[in-house]
Length: 199
Image (tube, rainbow, N blue to C red; front, side, top):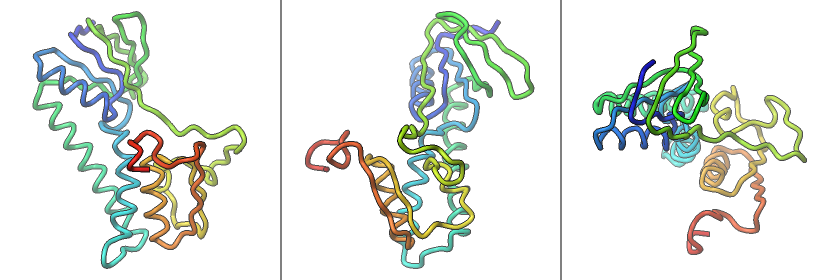
């Protein structure tokens, strides 16, 4: 069984940052991630890239946008991987779940299992879109922000749910690309997590 000082479950922005800092402080660190390092940042990157490219002097086609986004996300993930490698963080690809307070069982891509032990375990498994119960999920019609980059073409009309930073950035970018955008918020203000002067 592999043993570490710190074991981080989840390689999104929070998990990768925690792993990096723990290693910088001298810990022997293992990070378990099923997909790309920095995945939470991709949601933000998707929204930002839509807005940035839509604001450029020569607006690229949707196909060109997808090419830029792919390069951006690969670059973002590679940069994080290099930072972690430089600090000696062990990255394990797979889906981890707690086996005990100090042990994690990792299902690897090949179907095998790996048991890892950590003196401290950090749970940073990120988030995923929450689809309201009043809005039945229909694949390809109701999608999360990450799935926008998988659309072959943009729809004429889009309804975005969520008035946070990611929702607003995506709304602005999609509107600039010619979509008619409807932004729906659960609260009566935008950017509820920000200071009042921002909303």
